[in-house]
Image (spheres, one colour):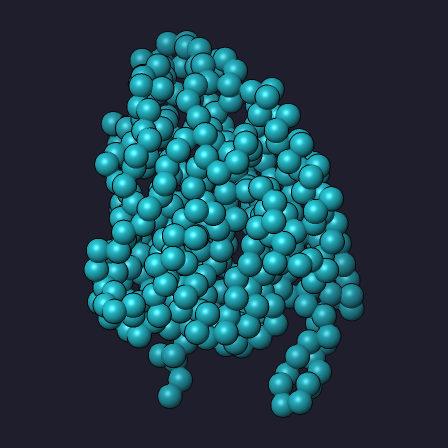
Length: 358
């Protein structure tokens, strides 16, 4: 039922982890957007498995094929369909949990909701579905690029290791310079060492991805039930393994006084600006033209290479053994997913905003 996202720029994803393919249809993409297929593939490569020693070793090329909606390098305004064929499924790795519920996975809840589930890699609940989102997000990014809006995400924390630098002090061109996607080189090295050790221990850890959206015009968002930060939060919380979302000052703002937290207005030329940005670029649920920034917390991957106590579908006690190929920490590969969901949300609100004023 809830396989679609967005209002005007609307996507619907399909497919399972071990099915023939996954994919997405995009309805509402404006005509005339320059579509760079190499850029789409670059985005897919940032998310794909098997890219380093600290990610799952499943080998998927994640080649993205455009089936419709693009002609001579431009969007036509008609539905865009993209498909990514699965190439490296090892379904036998999951036969041992055909009737068992893996702790902290969607096995039990899917069984209860549907009465049937695809146990191969989690089926539809697998994070493999997010490849389709990244493909659609690449289209949204290309549209935003023509509007001067940039979306950058990076890993700010892995386990208990985190960068203490605010995003303004980081060089976003360095995000792709290391396999953990942290633009703080010294901290990145420590993160990589930690994740690799966790992998060797047969365990997993969580982390945090920060996202910064630059160039967003003032006026995006709705004032009551469709606030911009609420839709961004929904977009992020809909990503596999996400456990938390905060924007602007977030929970730290709860410790402050209003006199400390208020962002004072000033004029810079003919533009209204703020002296600080604890609001995170959003006030009253509507963008104010400042940078939008937020954090997304990811839990440790539920599949660990250790035996765990559980039950099976008959209610009997069972032991679940970790098998297959899994990420010891999801955050390095989650970076392009966070960017994709943010880009689609901002583009959707941009298109909605064009309908509110003559």
